[in-house]
Amino acid sequence: MLSESRLTLAAGRLLACLQKRADFSSAKVVMLYCALPDEVPTMGVLKHWGAQKQLLLPVVEGEEMYVKTFTLEEQMRHGTLNILEPQGQVFSALSTIDLILVPGLAFDLRGHRCGRGKGYYDRFLAQPEVQAKTIGVGFDFQCLPDIPTDAHDVVLDDLILV
Image (tube, rainbow, N blue to C red; front, top):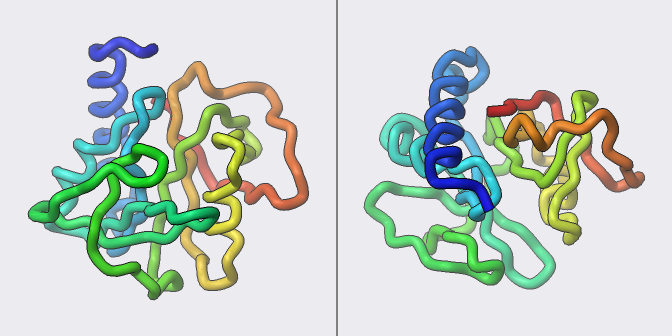
């Protein structure tokens, strides 16, 4: 388990890194995630950018992952995987998403990631409508020399390690 200070430091580093990136600055629609205890926290990004950008969060129902719009005023609920999820309508204009921040258990510098084994992100990112730039987000210790891949794995465009 990561310490609270390590999580706080990582959250600050992620926010600072995103603020310096041209692709994030120019993005109008950004999909990110609500972090599990072993993932880089994103609540600071949600709170800081919630009024300036359209932010989307994943929602898992059964074997599928959808996205819904996050608003600062909205109440979140714990979903199927005990992850905080927005309660609004499903966001269907997937082609308008500019940037997607993707969590993972491990990454390599070639854009491969190891998720939690269900393939939610790989199936979501493989949809033809999803043309957004994808950025893996993880802790520096999660970067490995090589991640084994399967044919269905989607390669990420970039990586942020904090």
